[in-house]
Image (cartoon, rainbow, N blue to C red; front, side, top):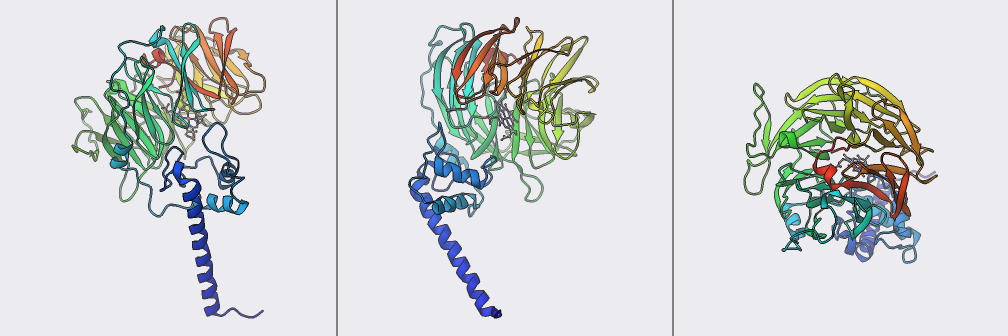
Amino acid sequence: MRPVSRHASGLALLLAAISATSNIDAAERLYEQHCAACHGTDRLGGSGPALVPGNFERLDREAAMDVIRDGRPATQMPAFGGKLSAAEVESLADYIFEPPPAPPEWTLADMQHSHSVPTQTLADAPVYAADPLNLFLIVEKGDHHITILDGDRLEPIHRFATHRALHGGPKFSPDGRFTYLASRDGWISKYDLYGLEVVAEIRAGINTRNLAVSGDGRYVLVGNYLPHQLVMLDAGDLAPLAVIPVTGKGDRSSRVSAVYDAPARSSFVVALKDMAEIWEIPYGDDREPVYPGLVHDYRYAEGIADDTRFPVRRIRLDHYLDDLCFSPDYRHVIGTARDTEGAQVINLDVGRRIAGIDLPGLPHLASCITWQYKDRTVMATPDFKAGMVSVIDVETWQVIRRIETAGPGFFMRSHEATPYAWVDVFFGPDNDRMHIIDKNSLEIVRTLVPTPGATSAHVEFDRHGRYALVSVWENEGAVVIYDAHTLEEIKRLPMRRPSGKYNVYNRISGSTGTSH
Ligand code: DHE
């Protein structure tokens, strides 16, 4: 074989570089022609999601090609298979997986530009005849809508379109009149449950995890994966008050796993994905809580008007926390760590780990609930990996029972007025089952199968604990309503992949049967 001269191999490299550049140029032109109108000229999203790496958590390149070619059912994403060749589809997929020239930013100006307050005059009273605190909001993931259901008559009273892919439960103003919704694309909407209309909207990020509303109803905190920042909004009209970069020493920064309200502490608690820390952001009038004898590392938010409004307390941990919940008094965070077995208990007052819990597998702490068992308070959590529910004493942090289930579960719910806790079997061949656990004996006393062969998931009770609503988690799915005492089916309402459902009263009253 003839040796390739240094000159010739340099030429080959140059030609390859030119060809790669012209491929990218061609893909860029295709993008501008077919995608930019919905996904933004900068690929940071518009009516469609942002198309940049970091925003495709569950979509690989092959799956992206399928979506470009075939479209996405129940969304505005059309099929381009008839217009583009296979090579063009492939080059578009390559292009959107290419990191943008500079890290994506979503600035205060971007947020202000997206901000709107469409409704200036609010209804004086509910525009329907139903108990406004016994409404259910049912998120229909299948076609991105919410159905509002009267919790007494069990009839829908309204249905409205939401932004694409809501995630995390809707949150409520303390009086239950308004609900706040977050979409994975960063859109935050405030919706009036009296007038049944959107009253304010803003895009607070490119890839958002969830939002929390302060217990005093004044603030909304939004946690983002992209960019690495928290955004504090005025809960009145969703105007941005402060953008808080999630940064550490040097050039470290982190995605936000989730944000939570801790009403008993008048603070927000922030879980981080890429730094072994939890943040606490007090929002009461006395902003800097005093924990006697402790030195805290406060860093002030880079606010837009005033640097000292939202001090951040950093609680340093030994491990990265993946998933967490709170003890009923909000003194403790119970979290699982990516890099270690079991769960850890962090006392928020002293700002450190005080106990471990023997929880093998991958407990889904975000959906843990509590109840009184004999003379103690217990906390129960399903597990993502194993078919079991663990019941934990919140005084001693000992696991007092492991209840074997038909497969790993996602969501668990109960209510003060029912003797039962309901847990789904979300994964595996038995995912059409729903277990009913007796809270006194800690035994499974019944297993329901709402629709054989279809995933059943996520339960919510009405405010009085009379009915339990279960999702049949399919595109042509349903919400099945059971009598919470007899466990008999009462009726079913067809819905488009109903995911979470939320009763206003249970949420604002802090029912122990639901995760917060
Ligand atoms: Fe969720 C809540 C994290 C995937 C449906 N999910 C939450 C919360 C967190 C979380 C931290 C609590 C925040 C809140 O309610 O404000 N979820 C995660 C993940 O890290 C994970 C595993 C991966 C991801 O892509 O984000 C994940 N979640 C899912 C899904 O695949 C689900 C089943 C379908 C979906 O909508 O994407 C899903 N998550 C939900 C729902 C809630 C939720 C319905 C609200 C639970 C509730 O009843 O309060």
